[in-house]
Length: 307
Length: 94
Image (cartoon, rainbow over all chains, first blue to last red):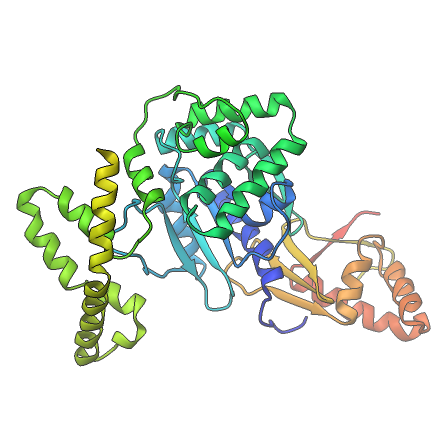
């Protein structure tokens, strides 16, 4: 046999999905392959090379799946912002021999119903798609269209995402029959994503359904996140305002002095000497001060908008 | 390899044919790196889609590379033996 050679993206992406599906099967959790080449296979977007792979796992199986990944050499890289307007919804894993990142989602932003309930809805509608000569469970095209639209709407400020959303709307307009469009509305109702999908539904002249289940996610946070024109520093201001009085000092200290582990993850220059770490903290603070006026203005705008 | 015995790719593999090579992940040993087959190994892998014996594989290679079967037979047997050991192939009733 030939010795291992560096993987190319066109190989690593489909093979990576197959690896994830096998890990999920081995540890006995339900997992859906989402986004990227799956959308292309389902005709929901034009084929293009993905650079990472995304899966949605049932929330109760999240730890088992990530432990299973760790056991075969994939490491959680821990490079997460400490504070975001959107609660953490996925973790990234990397492997020294693979040129891709694996994003394991335990819920998907924009579906405001209970994440376990949302997963059950998507799972009940799953279909098999074939990648790397393996069958992979994936959301059916209607549910997958809802999920990908939420992904595009989350970053709607970016022109490429607006174009992606418009392309998806075009596919639905051209290729879906009335039953599929009605089904999209039904999925939106059952997953609590009627309001979050409003731009797509209204674009398609479809009704925006009321949720048919209890919502556990915050529509206000979704709107704030998707409306915000700046993303740096703003989450700290919002969360500082929301924190109870007795937690504000600790929160402020955390804002001023980042967790060294987190900082080393996002600023490689911060390692390994203490002097380098202090410099990295200073760089972070000066950057934040530079961005503070814009973040304050944006926070005021968003608060006025909410009335 | 037994004369006339069938061969098949194992069913617990994920594989991709891209850029003149085959990259295989053995799903029974996920911690192991993928195996890359190129050159004649990739040609043999592709031939497995229609050839299920060493004889048929040898004939397919002879046609593809325009070489006499006697010259290729040993090469094919060695590759099949290695692929069986590596967990890429399994015997199959014919």
